[in-house]
Image (cartoon, rainbow, N blue to C red):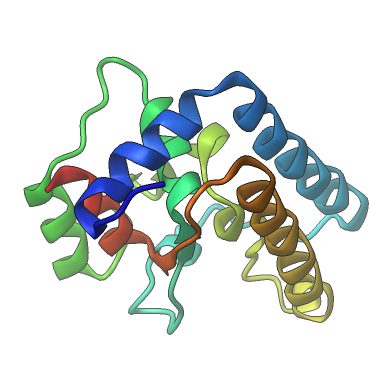
Length: 160
């Protein structure tokens, strides 16, 4: 286990690269995908879900989820502290480009569950809490330090 906050990103990156841990996280993401498919919420591809400040919400992730996304970025895709700072200044996600998510297939739980569709409000909170509990248990089973933080701040911790 890491002993200092500075050691946490390396701890999470190593865990995200472990095939058994990645498979566990992907199984949880599959549950979310199946639940979303069954409910069929409307997605207008407006980018509102990624414009945090403008639409009054925040994205929170675990360190493992952030590491999972970062370890699976395509080789040509980069992330830097200035890119995160620019996203923070705009009030959105550093992976939002032209209203499209550039990490759609590797995005964290909060992105997978959140929909602007008003009919989704009744069930998305329960799905989020239930699957986040599964992620917490995955951390516990594998001895992964659990931290939950705002998306851009968590990404910054990997860039430091």
